[in-house]
Image (tube, rainbow, N blue to C red; front, side, top):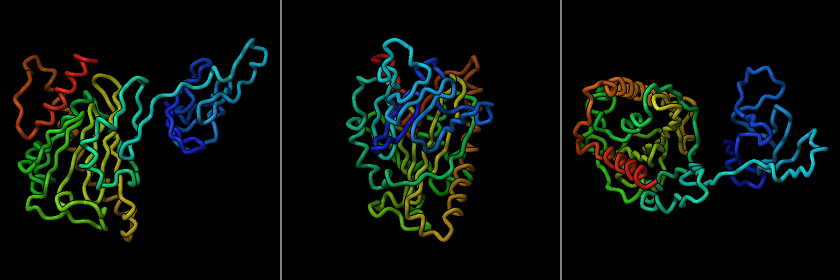
Length: 316
């Protein structure tokens, strides 16, 4: 699909498939030997299919179809691009392929006050980190949804600073999990610039991690937020984009680009350790003796997610 902000400022989700002969409109290989290059991201006034030059406005309406003048009863509007339901929440764009689905925001009503002080809708995106993950996407969600693994995987990077035993896990009333991991001594997390003004004393001294089921994940700290975008490609493979998001106050830092590099390097160091868990847990899961293990109270978020998945399977 194509996510676009149209000329009136409305964000839309359009089909990326030309209704003529199903050519993709954007996202082609930039090295492909065709005269029209369709970048995956950018600015444009319309979309044009490189196959036969059918073109569409930013609201999806067809605006041109050369060579169709003799087609009987050809109605351009009938061949506009299909659109999908779009909802904005916390600066994130959610798309639902089911036009009858219930709105998302009411389901997250209890989550909103827990994260609104981070001013998610004001954050600015830094260059993402990208990873190829050769295991099922749910394993990445499980690793990211709890801090119990600070004890092992991150004992050198995180455990001393944010001990797993201090993890505070909410019992949510919605399709999400949330936990907070405070600093070891409860002191505020050091910041290089003024954090958002509305953060509480608790939020100034902890990491807050949210998983909106099934796999929208982000964590927030006073200085920045990181969004983990999972893109499943098969049952045993997915891509993961780690997207750092910083508050506009980052401009107070003498060298904002230097700060961005520090954030990206920190996230990469931690995630490289998480990648080890994903790869080896997936390998272990293939064993004929592998069976579900007992869970700690420090990973009750996984129980919450598993129950949600079971509900979706039993009551689709």
